[in-house]
Length: 579
Image 1: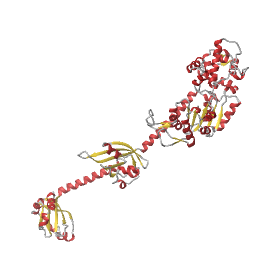
Image 2 (image 1 turned 90 degrees about the horizontal axis):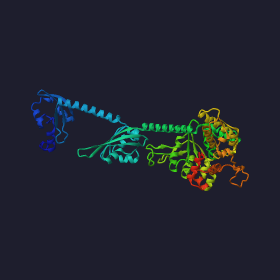
Image 3 (image 1 turned 180 degrees about the vertical axis):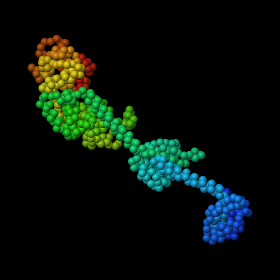
């Protein structure tokens, strides 16, 4: 027994216990007690009647919470045999005041309720709560991880966030970033199951300032992100329709005007377009500037099954090469300096399920031609700065006033793209080759512009109409339209006569094919003031030089003068260049 008492561990344990602890033998004789137990032992009643010490020793029984009263104080007595071969007949008695035990019991219930509340919060307040230690080892994670990460909690606990991030369970790791930065962070996380989470990661420090825990609270924002994508797509669709509406306004009813014709050549063209409009074959419209290529593109779209979807137009010659690619294919956010912060949809996306009209296709740079060819082949685009292909369902109508076959031979236009575009070739003859269309077009334009400025009964004299029929119209329908608009606005009389026409028309300047001597570049048929003759000659030269020419600089080279001179002459004679 002395060895038991001398044991420092036993002594320290007995002295530190707040309860009264007594060690007795099977006969109830005191063998050992702490201070509280020694005082209590002297007044103990005969507890052996309710507690059989011999049974406790023999059967190794355990008694818990047996009520006993000592000096008016209620205690709960617990008894257990000492688990030792040397002292197998000794019994440990522990006396706990009932009031204290009850308070502890109540406190334990409160702790259990608190733990239950915390557990409920842990599982339900966020989509995922994730706890790791200061080294990134997973300690605890809520059950929602199985849905959002595709892993059960037991598959995550004990593993580091570095391993899980490397495996692609989630990316990036908010815990890793918080540990690296040593502060609270908020990120958007992508999971292996395709979900997007908003994660707030908070480091917990000990008294020494060391990070001992990192707690992550996550919220699933996948549906919010998808809703944002839908809103963005709707905005792009609305923008597409807005562009189409603006283009229709700018066209000033060109569609209706283009359908005014009488010639057999135009009848054949309109018949062909009526047949091909209902299919999705690519159309290449060629012809001189001003013949109405855009108008026919409008007509095809209106007759097609795509009429309820956008018709998007772009002039490839009017946009710098550096911007043309982003206009057509769009770009992701941060793709280049000056890009919109959320990126931008290209015209192919805006024209999805509709029609894209590529005007002046002959001016498209070779670098963009290659990407356009891929879109025609793959039916998908990739935004600048992006990696994910976007399917597009777009019908292409292209137009040019250039000879693409010659450009292919010179290597300035891709042959493979040319054959992709030239599925349905449509050539629109110039107005001088279908003069029977001039009169109905003149009448249509007269009516249109007179109504626009609220004038009635405006008409042309027979002589004026005859002169218009004889004129070559190097600017084609556009030139005719602009002239009629000018006449309706500037001529005060209701009848527009030959004298009201510009000099180069009213004086009957012959067409080159009508010249008496085809070898003479200039033919003088009558005497007229030198200043007037100079005006007629310069006007004709400017119009002839403008044919099959895309810039004022090229006209200046042909006529061997400065470009500023060409610009001044165009303004002086009221001529218009290009579309």
